[in-house]
Length: 321
Image 1: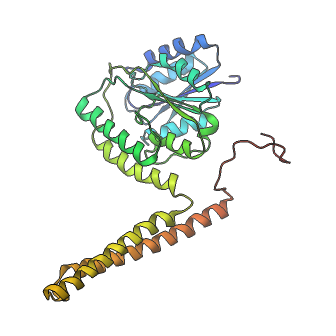
Image 2 (image 1 turned 90 degrees about the vertical axis):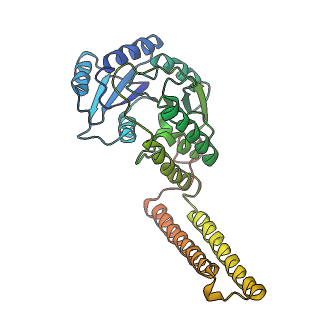
């Protein structure tokens, strides 16, 4: 087994027609680099012959590792499992469908060696359906970049390279793998983007459709809260609460103006109901922010987790960085 410098993590779901060719392409791309590497395949509950093929590949090559889930847990879970298993100082994520080109791996590593912590692939000439895949993805990438402040052209591209020390500080849940660069930025990672080759699928079928767009939107809310307000949730909920209370007060003022100028009775004016509703909702948001603040403080104090991340220490007794 020996020491490993590079770990390549590949989630697999019913890709029996792509695996052998993919492994050959990875070997052809990485072997000339002279770096010790491992390829970690995570079978995410495949129902075809994928696992049998992976077992055969592992029997022929000692640097091929295979993990099999009992059922389908999703791409994020597969990538998280692979990242936790990886022993290399550099970790590369790669799709098993053959659309990511392993020939781009040396370019990713070269860019990473220029001083970056994350190199994100950009499928600038994407070989997918324009209406169902490319258009929703373009819109989602623009929205994510605007909301998070981490500007990337292609969040959905699995082909990315990371320093393992960055991934150690990232915990993935749900379907949050596409937001890893956002979480990496939170701990001070240096991120760049690299144009990569994208190929049409030659075997198997895609596992994703338009429904994935809605999941991205929901995950975006979570990512924004976790990165911008994780230590100060009262700022988020309190801001919303004060805004709603303000709108409630404006609605009440409108009710009084109509009563004075037009003689409209308050009890027959719908604005008074809106005023009461908005003000109560605002108070509830403020109280929710206070509860979230207590939960966050209890979490950090009980687990001993700091609210900061240290890059280096110099002449600090008891620490060697």
